[in-house]
Image (cartoon, rainbow, N blue to C red; front, side, top):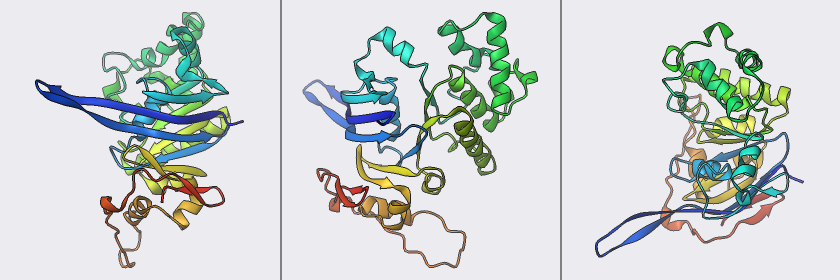
Length: 292
């Protein structure tokens, strides 16, 4: 059985409306399904506005979905009452894109990492402080800096603080929402290597949300491609990169920079008129699905 199963997840937002004007509906997440095996890093890719970050937030009910299911170890998280959801959040955590805006600038690093332990009433004060120092060392930070504020750390260090906070409750499933996109290229590899090292040491399962296809290809065995709220292609990452089937996937792959400036390039411009939003996913090769 998969550790995580998303079934027909939908999130619609209403906007506009007013005097003699009807509201419009934005289909941010439009009936998507996928599953993640225990210990896997599953990629969810697409451009900004494709719905991938909204998907992650709906899965943890940071925003409430319109309909669908999000099953964790066979239980539907979307049916949990408040107390059950609070308990479930010990097993499911999120690392956010911007390591500065996701940290309270008025709190010291120690208090930021300790906060989940206080909320869930884990340990006494001394035990919590020891745990925070241990988490700092785990993510490669010096416990001597626990009393600093977020602005006193670099971007990469702030992302490590966010990761330490996410790991404080010993989760088994972590959603990493564009965890390195706000960092310098020189720092990105360090954070990615840390994520992979922690996955092995702590037996973590990741949903890795990103727009950097090269990164997804490197760390994700399976992936789904989102376009305008729908999954348009999914399957083995190697198969998708070698034989992209959906026009949107082809356009994304054609935009990946190459290391050789003299190599021939053929940038594909997506013609949205050629995309059938209502096309169902079909299995075109073993384990390789596309909405064509």
